Image (cartoon, rainbow, N blue to C red; front, side, top):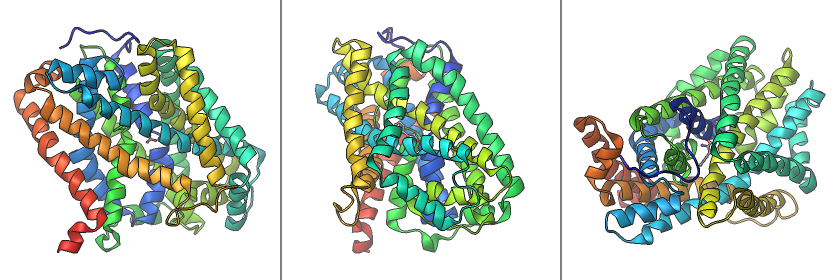
Length: 454
Ligand code: PHE
């Protein structure tokens, strides 16, 4: 165990860590991204590959991130530097923290745009804007929103401001207090929405769709997406879990905490599917619509179901809450680093916030005024979404696995993890061999190299 103390503060209890880390993990990934990825890539088979990636690749890295964070007790960048120096290795490992911060900024710039849509949809639901509307009409409604740069700007600016206010207040008064309220509320809303969907929706069709496994619909690219998503959903590869680990009290068990977070996140992904697909199937709405699935199709379902406007509002409130508790964890790695450079927290928050706000603007414009600018058919929005989650996060995660597995000594890991030797060995073996080889194979597979060679 290290005797270091974080200058940023500490979570007050194990529950506080659990809520913060679960709040980070549960986000747009579970409720917006996962359903449309599963919808586009063959339902059950995608789900199975995703679960395998969680267990064999993402969970071992989650344990590694929390362990590194708690041992270094600094921002991810400085934690890498400090731990590398402790082991007599190159301080260039700090670069991994740097890549992570960059990925975080890229992610947050489209994340806040999507969270902004969600905020607007709470308002639209309450106003009854899509009451009785056909799927074509709700699709149009969504296009109207994305084609207006200023309207979008209003909503993501609001979302970013809400996020920055929390982070500016620090670990105990900001982050911890927020998650104590928001995460339990999120679970209540989700339970309510699942119950609603099972009662008024077509649960049977949803279950057949989500759980029947058809591997013929699974491409190499889909496997890459499932892996990328396992990183995205557990908030890996950018240092979010490292920094949350840095605030974790020494007495808590890292292994137990990591497993609880991974289980809670997976349960929420499954429940989110059960809250969404029964409604879509009840109205025979298209499920393979990509990123606009829950904004273009789902409102058409709510619009014609009993109390749809209320449950619709609850759904988008859930989505907004989930995004909010994740967004704070995306900027905390950068903010903590600036604070360690000597900046005040409010000033750091403002600096990071301005950069993210400007890159959100790029994403915003890529959906309207610059929608003609594409690369291989992808807009900047699609590119940021794909490159950050499916390339940068796995790459960051791979480097983290190599760092924890090969650079940090087993003795240091054992001191921090304090667990039974057999379990530690098993984790370390998976982290050293299975995880990196898995990531590389999936990359190669997606590049077509493996299939080309066979
Ligand atoms: N895990 C979050 C989600 O599922 C997204 C996220 C990614 C948060 C990376 C932090 C870091 O929405």
